[in-house]
Image 1 (tube, helix red, strand yellow):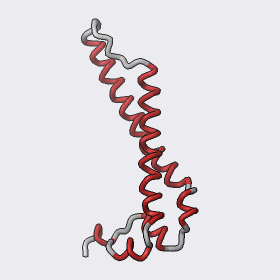
Image 2 (image 1 turned 30 degrees about the vertical axis):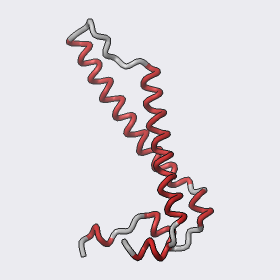
Image 3 (image 1 turned 120 degrees about the vertical axis):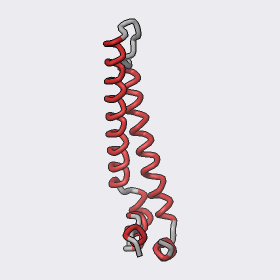
Image 4 (image 1 turned 90 degrees about the vertical axis):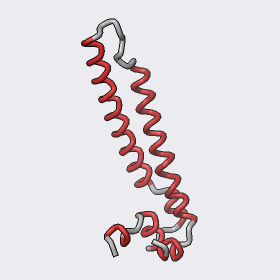
Length: 106
């Protein structure tokens, strides 16, 4: 069996090893990890967009290609919210699964 075939998702393993549904609903680990990863992705995206904007403004000064502060803040905010929503959603779905069934088909 390949290595990827033997790996279980963290949600399945934690549920199968005795984590209760109410514990999964209140776990901050999923929330923090998802928000951190997507916010870092947002920072990377804003950095690349700003670098491209500065480069365009350097070569063509008539085009204001530098992103405004409100766009930077809203981009980071949206990336954080997306991380929270799509980090909690799989955890809540895993909390509703039967641990034996979820581990059986992995």
